[in-house]
Image (tube, rainbow, N blue to C red; front, side, top):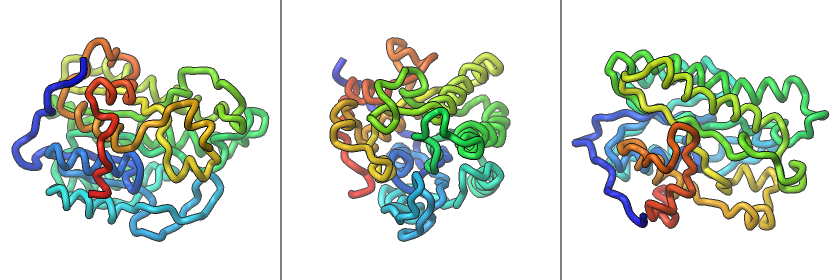
Length: 290
């Protein structure tokens, strides 16, 4: 199969997506892709304006991208964006952002738990990762997504319609080929993503036949500024054949309004690079640069 039908296009921007980690990378590209598909978007991240610095894998270097820049790209695509600063290390800040989005738009039709912990500990060997680092990773990657689901799910169930995308990781389901400092991965981050991956199955079992669509998305290796800070080099990138944030975002927008094909095994984990290849989306251009 080399092509697929075009995504359904709602009339007007009458659906609302809530996206975490939308200041850059997959989250930012997805915000614009969903806007082009007819969604208004509530976007959250720590970085509201360009030039702000936050901790990224132990570095305070300011990275390109911000909610304001993403919102400008959304507006250029004809959509509406609501910028809401939030930190996944502070679950209450994301719940507050969801409540603001609900007050502003009246509904959230799609929740994309995309943001991921970017502090220290992700690459630490098992015997060296501290309890504090482990707690931060779990709080950001498990407890905050759970808090957001609890905030928006009642409305979806009441309307008998809603979509949940949880971003997981290949490393949650595979043994590392090497130690983290030699091109593999450690224990803490994959274990948090493995725990997150069990959420959608529970939701399907607990809320059958209610219009809820819950899916795990796995992006493969997507090279971002944060990954470069972490020391992901050309050798590692060549080994894992990285995919672009724009290609993953194109898959997100397609899945927002289309049912995954049975052969993609949507009851488990949707492998976005493979789907992008099948839908001829691997070369999707960046929507942030247009």
